[in-house]
Image (cartoon, one colour):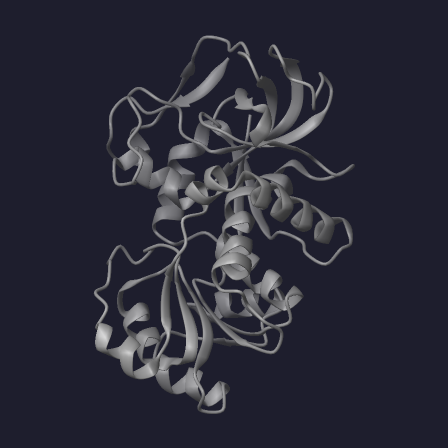
Length: 321
């Protein structure tokens, strides 16, 4: 079968599209024929050796696969050959992938494979962030940095389903237009953030900030938080990890909250399952629809990842064998 292989940590353009041995599911595992592989920002960091997890080399990147179950290993009871599933796994950039039964979810009938991939890391992260970590309440103000990306567009739609007033922050007019189309109440740029957010919230400041950017955006957020606000740390797309002046949290009485979706899914699998069921329910009811920028050939994974790392992507991207 064909797969993308990272032989050593380095530029994403060094990835190889090669033949690799076929896979066999082990105990408690399913073998999936890939219809779509989800692309995420951390995939590129992992290839470069800049992620928290550093796999042994060589390895195949990719943490999301949607497709048809081909065979199942010993002890698997929830799925059978022919079922369509989406799975959080390792080695997703390949024609076939193996995943643990407990990390697989049945796709609603007729669900697009790229939509299903979006529901895992991007939508899963945003949902967990706003539900468990922020405890977002109806009527609260939610400011989203990087709002035109995969997690950002997910946060916009989830925030609106949860009843928030959403202020999207994007770097270009084109991206701000996309954020408004995704349901944001307001879309602004990164200049004069403190003044604009204060103005849009009647001087109160943001109840919740979804920060996947870091850098100067974080510095601004630390100064426009509302009392009892929650500043969510999602990631650092700006490539600058900021430093918090903790005196601001004291005098303004807000919380800085870390969000590490991957660890949480393993720590609390029951809550993870409940979250996914809620997301799939919203999808089936037409309340949410992932923004899929495009579907690209598997062999183009390096070029796609380079664009994602340079913040050139809008919405979710999928690789298709």
